Image (cartoon, rainbow, N blue to C red; front, side, top):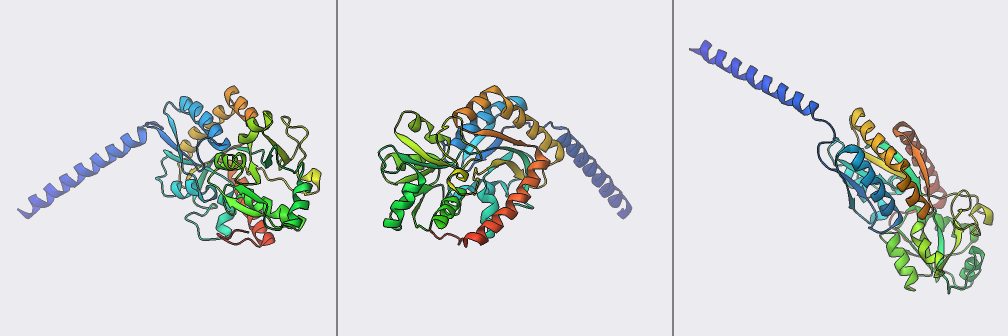
Length: 328
């Protein structure tokens, strides 16, 4: 009797194991993607990042045969997407845009992620034509004018950025330190909010990217200085930081990543779809409209770039004496 029970248990166990093996084989055979992919944009809808990424997501979805659904998670200097994706399953269905603060904030405070170990880097996309803009009725024609006024009224000239210790904030603080002045930092959740505050007269200076272009083109705003390596073709009369004596480029590069452990085949599928989308004529037109350039890096090169930015950010934090969650 005991032998019969043991034999029955053995047969049942073998059957269960066979069923699990078959289930696993079917799961492995399921082509990727078989359902929509979520792509987190850690800024509000309507800004430069959102506009570009939505264009790329639409085209990449066509290549993948499944929609790439953009989900906005603004705030916290752009790291909420990283916070979200680090908890996701490593199956390729949850991705995020990673902005530069992802590499800076871990040097300042405890974060939910380690950028060196917690992400699978898929593709690097672009960087922003960042700069400092003012309303057209502002009294300043250039950065030197702002500095002169700030020396007369320390801490009274306000500027808006996408958050404390983000690239916008850190760059203005470095500019102010070099000039020996103090400005009043006002954080917002994204570029669209900065532009609304600037044009509404709630702040004096706005750090913006391509979203300010329509206001500049129709004469409601002007850009005092760009943080790009070269002058922008759209605004050939606007100098770069280097041209005004500040040897620095701050274009806040960004790309797409998923959680650690993404299968190489999934990374390649995603990379190839996003690369085709980035190189499409419609995307090139969007980049031109936003006054940006493609900064394509493949998965391996993007991972190496991330390591370099992580170390550069550590040095910058030490040089500026930055503090977490402290307005400067």
